[in-house]
Length: 436
Image 1: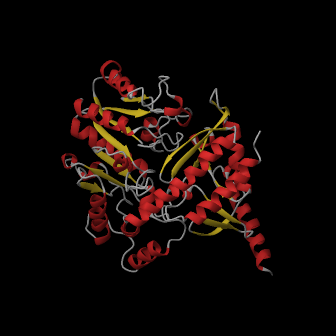
Image 2: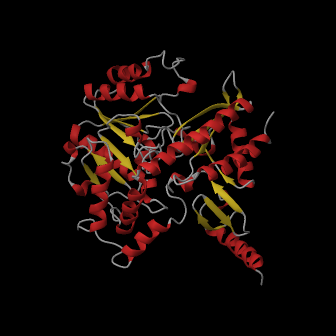
Image 3: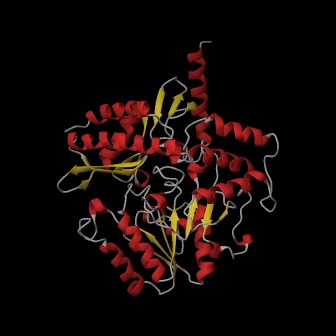
């Protein structure tokens, strides 16, 4: 039997097995068999460029040999250990995380098993420290998938089928410069959206706000990038009102912006910070909460998970930080991001359906509209672009779980300029098919 015939046979078998998967009909009919860097190959031998880095978690791409080597070495010694005990990978990861984080963050816990549980833990720490209960989040935010974090997220369609209590949880507008809800324009506006947040705290809240949690760049909500001034004013407001500022750096952290954390790019010091996704390097599941010293008072048993501080994942995290925490590596992220943005700005002039292009480092969004003057979102066209891209060998994600009008470009951070050029050449061919 030929190699191709064997692959086809494998593909058919996989399709049969798909019948056993929950909501299997939602899964695309592609069986991927191997990956390397930014590339994937399916069972038919077709090559794809992954513009989404898995689920934005493959900071070092598929099958990074250094990370996998570190994990294999640890696996020969010990695969699992209760987080009640000490082991080198966990301790080393904690030390290394603190060394690369904003200076005010001096403690870390890895006793969390996902970004969702990291954000939950950060909120618990804020409530425990302040003695206050209300949580403020932003419209369109994606801060987790657990029951509690779905109520905190600013995406109502994910809550609609369920009966979750939203007591003590409030939402406020995110600074969306392209479609400002205050119909203002930066920098003339002087970030008056922060004053609106102040008004909410004074007049709309219960007066019992423990924390504001936000993604410094809105990830699934459309890749919104607030001005640096916004963060400086928001931090000042939080300090004045004794409110804990939590940064969800699950997507923005570990070099994605060209800095280790977006907090450093925006030059602001949050009180708490959650990290996950890219910390696993090549796909290992890991998360952590970084905090100021004053939060080191809550008993550990109040937020601890069986597979938190996973020994293998911490080994992956140590090696990932070792690779990414390098000026040359981070400069490459910035240079590749600038290269992609320069091409996208040209695309914005070329295509009448691209309304806005925005991003920092390798966290980039392209907003699709029906008309540039009205800025009316074109969600259907956005979906069609993603579908056509897939057929042409590009994996692209769209905003709001496919309900939004922004597609995102977030490849692995170790992508080269040559690979960026290849990716953008393929994308241009896809967009050409939709030019009106």
